[in-house]
Length: 305
Image 1 (spheres, helix red, strand yellow):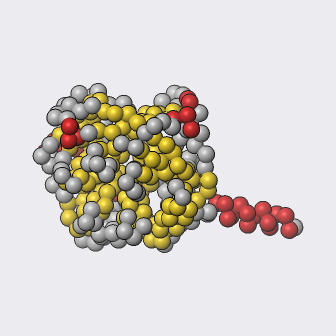
Image 2: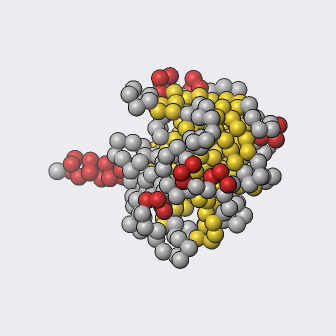
């Protein structure tokens, strides 16, 4: 009888372990500008009745070493993060809450709760949504503050290529303020080019898949994450690229720094989130879609500009 009990406790510990080492198999993708430093699978038991799943983006508070994660179910998580010796040493889930509406209530319906992009500013957390396109400022504990004003082309849902192809990413730029991009180009735009929007400027870049995350680098460039998935073969491709927005006018050159492919041996999942944690180090996270057949993977990597 001792062995079944021991196995049960070992399984329970692994099931709800905070971080589990994970080998991506992407060492061949390393280059002079890109290197994976660490990768883990993240698992947490539900907190306050809120499961840890469907993570669509990240934001990092450097001063407090806090990592924020947002789920496309409209849940916000706060985690204590320790990165030491270029490794993810500790990740502890401390809070889980629901993003509220303007009245302080839990929004009802997926079109209100489909949170996809997030970034941290001095005023709070900016969250971008699909289905009902908008960017909303929240307090760090998920309380509604105000809606941000969208660039005119992004205001109407009918302009997008689908209800699940809307505002997938958002970042804060010290010069241009809020920058955002749809997952796919708008209907009236060239399907072969993504557009990054700010309040007064736009930047067009060649598309290499769905644009799932953007982040501002320490030098003021934009790091973009694109994802491509072949439904027939199950093959995945992730592409990380730099866009030097200060050096381009309307059409930008996209400088690819890493291409990760399952066909090259990479063990990838549905990566959607990106945040900078240091001068040249970033975290990338995958969305498990609340499925037992997928994983929440967190990857620490370094880019040399």
